Image 1 (cartoon, rainbow, N blue to C red):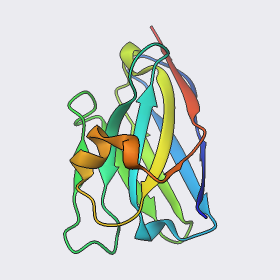
Image 2 (image 1 turned 90 degrees about the vertical axis):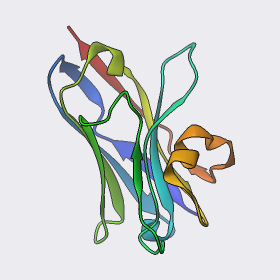
Image 3 (image 1 turned 90 degrees about the horizontal axis):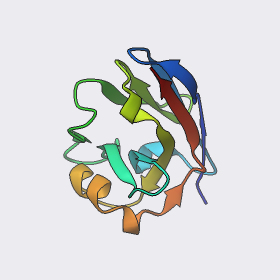
Length: 131
């Protein structure tokens, strides 16, 4: 069983940066497709950054238009962790951010757009961007 625990959330002003961490335990996260999602109360969950597993034959990463050019997803194999670097934060980036892992072969855009089949979720962390 894979467990995911996020950290790094908090409050930041518009234009600032935060780096979210997602540390995995139980299994190696490198064999999983990984995604970052966010949700605002009353709104649908949004897949913002998804990337294929390291063992994938065709590695790829997808970013939602809302974060393209500002957010970067990365992995640290040694720490069994995944990160989301968030720069140039906007007020509308305020949300609960969760990491998720999906086994098997996946297209990153499909993983982000259709999260219903995702196997593992972290509990999420709150990011608040103030003006």
